[in-house]
Length: 189
Image 1 (cartoon, one colour):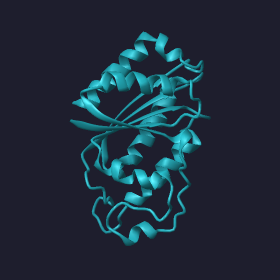
Image 2 (cartoon, one colour; image 1 turned 30 degrees about the vertical axis):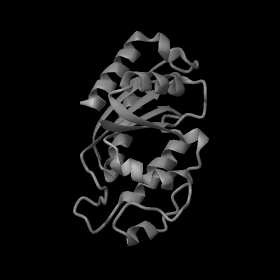
Image 3 (cartoon, rainbow, N blue to C red; image 1 turned 180 degrees about the vertical axis):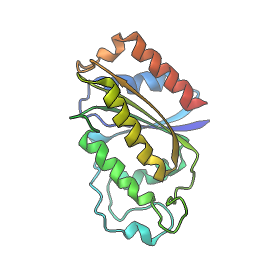
């Protein structure tokens, strides 16, 4: 059974990220082992850029927070699914801190600079935009998802749902739910 790690990067507990987290959990039930990590409820400190992680050749970090405890799951999962709002045309700050902490997977002695145990994993990003250019946001998400390659996520898929500022409104958008269904199938493939 595939292991899928869902990263919910929203602080809005009744928002679209939480609604879709439940939707994905139901879609993947019995087909994958699901672990949810809700950044808004966890401590994810910024990267210190101390390079202590470079003294080892396995992903690790000297900080002791919820991200550090999650490193083994990040390294061993088959796929990562990020659910998040778009904030000021970018990842929300807490997700950016999460991304920065994947620096702990970087190993300059490796030809691909990665000390990830597996380098064949998938990453999907499903983002919610209140208003604005969905095509530009999709480009931003695609670009940022590629940065997770250092942690072994080499294949990515993204979707941005537009006009999704109202909490729970994603559940009333058939085209965006169809995109979620396609993403779930892709993660299992």
